[in-house]
Length: 468
Image 1 (tube, rainbow, N blue to C red):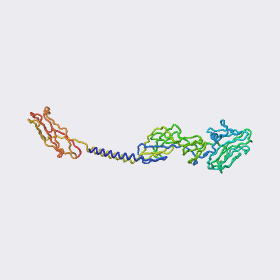
Image 2 (cartoon, helix red, strand yellow; image 1 turned 180 degrees about the vertical axis):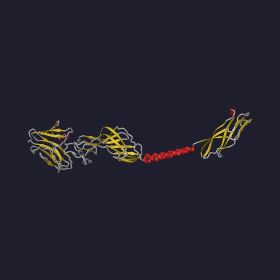
Image 3 (cartoon, rainbow, N blue to C red; image 1 turned 120 degrees about the vertical axis):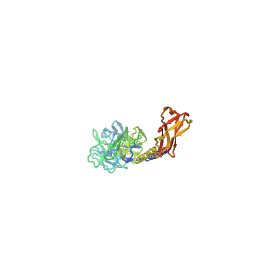
Image 4 (cartoon, rainbow, N blue to C red; image 1 turned 90 degrees about the horizontal axis):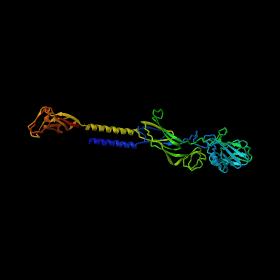
């Protein structure tokens, strides 16, 4: 009964401490996450944000052209979006009496525009958009010798607009470049040179003294990720332990959550390589624009936007055993959210278990039964002779006191007789007087005609004790 009580108490202690352990998990997030009190067991949960990469080249936000030299987003895709009143044939657009042929680089950027014809024509290079460059700028790219009757590179900026014309020398358009209504056009008249002319349209910073044309390049593209990596160290600097956990997505992910310990990856964002006015969720990320609520990206920009319903990518679950004490956990793709067990509760639980083990050991020791062997008739022999069946004789009462113990039973009584044949003629038993620590050994005659000699020191028995 006492042992059961100890067991029940110990189980309750351990249960209570275990529940405290479950309820006392701690959470942290960031990149990196530094923990100083981790218990050396598996992390409860680790989730990693997947964010797109976007190199702003030292600027605080993306804007038209980014850090590229040419801020005018002149791509063939944009030109085909902005010019629909004439006719297209491959890379050639005809407006009025002028054919504009576009030469492009591998990434769709226009590197030269060849205009040829004998009557007026019109080409939109940027149509009713925002060029939020935020710096003094120069519009250039018209061949030398231009004019209103031949050819010009024109800018209509503001609302109401202000007209700027580059006739071949470039023109400062800084006064109105941040207005929301911007049109950049090539206008041609009747006096076009025979064989045509080449335009190299560009908007560059006024601080850029080199007027040599450079094609537009998407200098701040959002880049997705095909995988992710989680790093665990035992110190932020000079670690002695470093563990790497990886995931491969099997596709390009532009935003989501990697569930390291639970398994699976949520794909929460999608990518549009060339935005053309599609309806998209907010907040979006653009290669050309800084996000503001309710605004739309620039036509032709690369845009990453949140999906209404995420999709799930299969990635395996991974156990992440925490190091005792200090852990520095970081990811190469975004913030880390981590839930773990602090070591103080584990220590307390270990102490509870050790205390219960000690109590159980003590209880077991207290309940342990020990045995002592005794000889009943040390000073005399007993003769059982010519007595009726059942008559008894007995030895002197024997003191069986054992310091610190209480006798609980007498076992293994035996008699060793000189004649083997006499063994079946008698029976023995002992009576235990617990209160006085005494034992009396009885011999019963089993044969009325028996005459059995019981030698001295031949009556033996064993006493069982427990701790007092």
